[in-house]
Image (cartoon, rainbow, N blue to C red; front, side, top):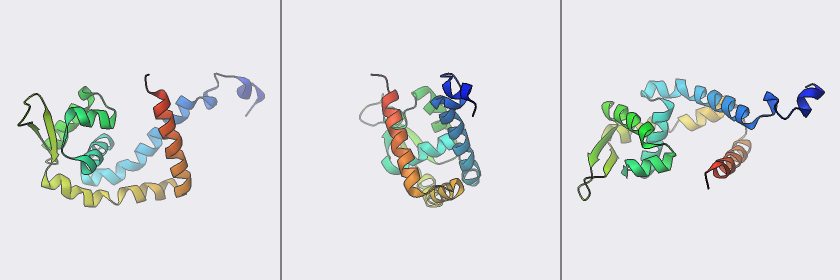
Length: 148
């Protein structure tokens, strides 16, 4: 790296946003061939991860858990419902609440998905300690970037 790049605060290579963006695209691309046989996109996989851990949940709760606005989450849920993985129903005690639950097929998909994290770790070629450290650092970045 040239001296000018090191001292330039606007050098592309020094930007955290650039590194995060490129890393995110690269990691998501690693998931694609693992998720396609399950009929899932990466955003749908994240929804399913949340539901496998926390179902049933309201759309509002899922939105908060995934840190997605409801306008982004709703189309994902509609596609997952059309695929037979989830069911969206009005809450019996409060008609304003839209509850999301797994179908039997959606719950069964978890068994196939259990191979995904290990395959991603293998494809990244990084140690589990490095990945845990990266996760901890990214979690701090996420927290720091939250509006106060």
